[in-house]
Length: 330
Image 1 (tube, rainbow, N blue to C red):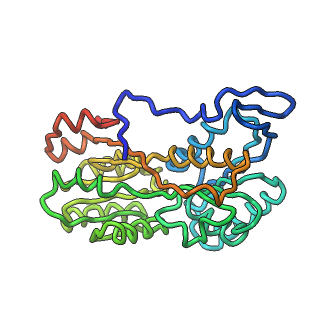
Image 2 (tube, rainbow, N blue to C red):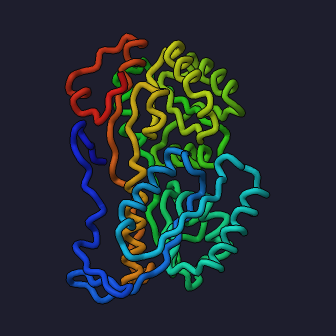
């Protein structure tokens, strides 16, 4: 994993194509053959405004903005609408859109796009697909395949626990999340990949989340808090205040937008997923078959320290950690 120290600038992906000359709907890049304008469809499993999706989208658009290609965005909204019926209907509507738009390549972000759209309708077809944001294992969706490659999303949990253990009184680890498919998949892979034993709680609503938070303070020594899926964002201020009042043990997350709820964040970089996917889509449009592009795993990460919760817990944070943090919440 790589750190992005405070004040640093991440390398921009916008220069991927280099300097180009535009004429008559064609682009000629140095060292490349003539490329005709194509259609790119970006499919977001979730909804506009959900922080993780916005990060992936930003990474995609940073690369694709300024190219000659036509880019469309389609959102399935399956985070706020979790029924099987809705997900299947959303996928069918997306299929109808694809048939009308006729994209030359599809970028599909997160598990639900793969499960409900790509796997049943476009696996091993002639439509090139680049997936990203699929947690841990894409093979459950038949990916990669002859027409699809992508980036797997893995969690930097060992790095997070290394920080939390410095302040923990024991080794018992808890996990708190809304009752979402992605959360259960995360836990299964924490156990499989890292051999971590967890006390798990999957909340039904915001009040149930707060109840579980209180219970876990006395049952475990460290607490991992997963995404709220944007489901509780209308109560964010109340929940953050509740957490600051009631935190007794070190807590952490791997998602930067959940940093206000925890003591330490070792965050995945959503933009990394989108940027890689968009660059790969362009590579496919230049003629490389998806099957010739290896599947990748995310590598970037950065540290966030919530000094408000640290003060509530009475923790002294070493200067070396404060200095290495990308963000301090004060």
